[in-house]
Image (cartoon, rainbow, N blue to C red; front, side, top):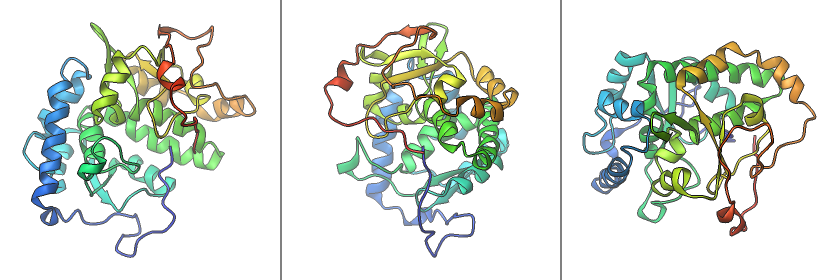
Amino acid sequence: MTHYSAVKPPEAADDWTIPQEWDRYGADEHAMWDHLFERQTRMLPGRVAPAFLEGLDILRLSKPGIPDFTELNARLMDATGWQVVAVPGLVPDAVFFDHLANRRFVAGRFIRTPEQIDYLEEPDIFHDVFGHVPLLANPVFADFMQAYGRGGQRAGELGAIERLARLYWYTVEFGLIRGAEGLLIYGAGIVSSFSESIFALDDPSPNRIAFDLGRVMRTPYRIDDFQQTYFVIDSFEDLLHQTIESDFAPLYRALQGTPDIDPAAVLDSDRVDHRGTQHYAHSRTVPTKAPA
């Protein structure tokens, strides 16, 4: 996944941050947040990792209207030492990783329009804050996100941003986790999407495969449609341990020159929760992409 934007706007600071300017949101924008929030929170219980719902409560995100980052950050800092900073849009990878490594999560400040309610190309404040921030109130996931940021700084030096981006995509954005009674969602791209919250768990089309670090780094992803494969972690603790206890440098070297694995493929070595029919993907004409 790329976080790159070519030109820093003149109003942005050196670290690409800008004021949220919460007072400038209009009634229609607050109403859009409330509509999206109500729609998602009505259907997520029983489908999302309990830590996500706990984060909503800790951060009091049920308060009507777009969250004011000043109020939100006071609660988030108390919980895990993280804060949310506004940015004008997508930012360079180095800037993104630096913010994560210092426990700052970058968020766009605009909110989608009614015409974009179910799909928009660039993440908005609902995706960034509702989708991502509740899990930053969980100490283990918060530590994983910081470790990922530090790993991103090293990946840049090793020419392995694309490999590491796949880890982010298949966990932070589109990850599944095992619950006591079955699979649950936790990735922000799923949690903030009404349709993908259903597709990722219920549709027979996608594969659902146990998380394996090297396997994930060899698997391209879809940037503009539902995923063909979702990877399932056992716990946030396991995800954190694999991140901080793995030496990524030799892993990157070992993966150099290895062919990518088709996003629809199921390998003999995979631990498979569900082998997908790929019916949905076969019905679409959008090509699979693997951007850096």
